[in-house]
Image 1 (spheres, rainbow, N blue to C red):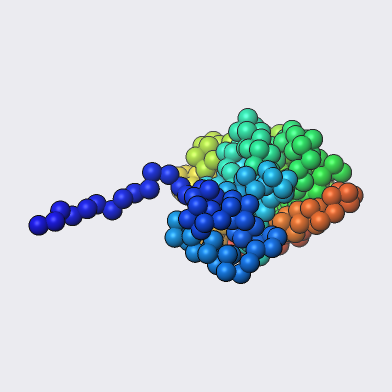
Image 2: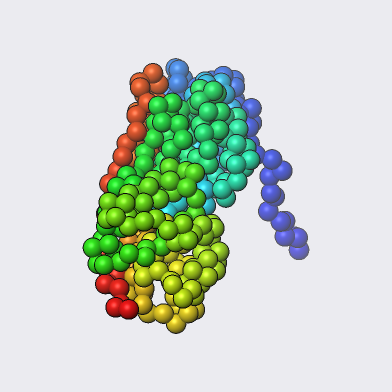
Length: 345
């Protein structure tokens, strides 16, 4: 009785040399047949393609890019894929890139500057055709530009004039949201924010402050709270703020993670929205329309941001010497049930 012979697993991937040998032609002919560049007789091309298919050969895209000094891949570098905003932004880039025949290489730097630069170096090494980045500073864009890699800064901008950007008019829409709270009668409006050094946080803070100033309301430093970078840190900061005897009557959370922290703190303290506290958010998230009452939010279309960033990168690849430009997209305020006039004292 014959023994069963286990399936043999190839010890290595097939190479161009293997395909050439199987097809009985030279490596140069094999290369032309597989790339479609240069003349190869029809019967020879068919033989090469059949051999490649049989061997499971996949062309080495990086080696091809190194030879031609061109690439059909683009690098995308974002800050935190656990945040749906960045995931949606990357999805927008991916759909547009795919439609134009580009492959996306996605890296999450977790907001760590050293990891951001390491990823940028990897994109340079693989000859990426361009890079889209949510930058942590001007360093990453300066490095890529020095390497002659087209760059688009998206969501926040550090290198306006030096490279292209796609952003939201953060200051204007933050001002409008604060105006809404003031119109309801609120005077003690807290701002929970992650940072003010980036254009996103800085402009949102500027819009909030400008609204207060226009209404003749002094900006109280105790109502401007740095709440960290995640939900739990925001929750703790919000509990501390809302447990005070002179707590604010409204809270403006500067992003969706901070808003979730505020919502959890409200429940921890047994407060009611909007009866005891009005809550608004910059950045909409799915949960905000699922809770009761829904959270009034500034909705950025992150997918559209990603698509616009890819369009800008394609234009830059097409015309590398054009003047750098910044595309500013609109955001929409989505009113729900989380705001009301403050309770009479």
